[in-house]
Length: 411
Image 1 (cartoon, rainbow, N blue to C red):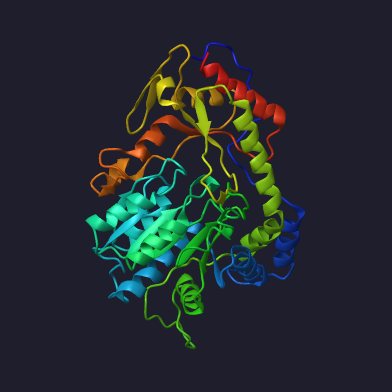
Image 2: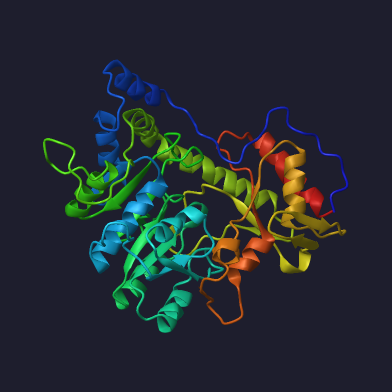
C-alpha cells in the first residue's frame, strides 16, 4: 500500500524515447541539399539494404510505417493463398486468420482491412508470446486456416521457430510482426527472418527510429517488387498513370530514411543500454512478490521494454472496466493500477500490458483458442502486469527512484 510521499522528477522520465545521433542529421541534410525529400532516394535505398542485411533476408521494402508493412504482408500472403480479388474486395474476404492475442491492435487490423476474421491464439507464460501449443489446438478447431500473424512482444521473442514449424505442418503462411523485436534473436537467428513475410518498425519509441517508418521483409524478389508497386499507388509501367489494381501511398520518405539510416549503426549500443535497464530492474526488485519479462530458452531479447508481473497472491483488489481502473489499497499487496499511479506520481511514464485482443470491445465476438480449455493466460498477464519506464537515457539514479516507488506500493 503506497503510504510514503514520493518526490517527483523535475523532468519527466518517459517510457521510451528516440535517441538522436549526429549521423541522422548528416543523411537528412544530404537529402535536403540534394532537394530529394520525396518517397524515393539514396537514404530509402540504403535503409532497404541495411535492413535486409541486418535481419538476414534477401529483400526489404522501406515504408511509411510498420502498419503499412503489415498491411502489404497481408495482401501478399492473401494473393499467394487465394489469388487477386475483384476490385473492391479484400484478399481475405471471409477467411479466418490466426493472430496473436496479447499485442497492439496494429498487428491484426490489416487482416480486417482485407476482410479477414481474426481468431486469437493464447499466450504462453514462458515468453508472453503466441503459444505454439495453443496454435496447434487452433488448427484442430479450424483446419481450413492458411494464415498466421504472430507478434514478438516488447523485444522479448517467444518460439517463432516453433510457430513456423506448426504453420508448415498445416500448410499455412506466417506473417511475423517483429515491430518491437529488431535485433533480438531466436536460436541465433534474427527476428524478422522466420516469417514468409515480416515487418519491423521505426516508430518514435522503438529501439531505433526515424520518428516513423517501417520495413516489409521477404526472401522473394517478386513479392518485394510487388510491394513497392502497391506502396506507390500500384502505378503500372506506362507513360501515363495506369492502374490495374488498388494501391496505397505507403512509401518511406527520403528524410525519414535518413533518420533511420543514421540510427542503424547504434542498434547494438541501444540494445546494450536497454539490457542494463532490464538487469537493474531485475536486481532492484528482488525480494518483492513480482517477476519481470521472462526470457524464453534459446532467445536473446533486445530488451526494448521492461515489464513486471505481480504474483497472484500479492495482488490487492483491482477493478477495471473498458475505460477506468481502480484498486483497494492493502498492506503488503499491490497491483498494476497502484504501481502505475505511483510511477505517474513521480513524473514518470509506465503503461499497462497490452490488453488482449479477445477482450477488446471490437473483437469480443471473435474466436479465442486457449492452451488449456478455460485457462486464459493472456487475460492473467494483462491483469497482473505493467510496463516500467525503459528509456535508454534514464540515469541509474532515476531508475533507483522508480524502483523505490514500486517497493513503496508493497509496504
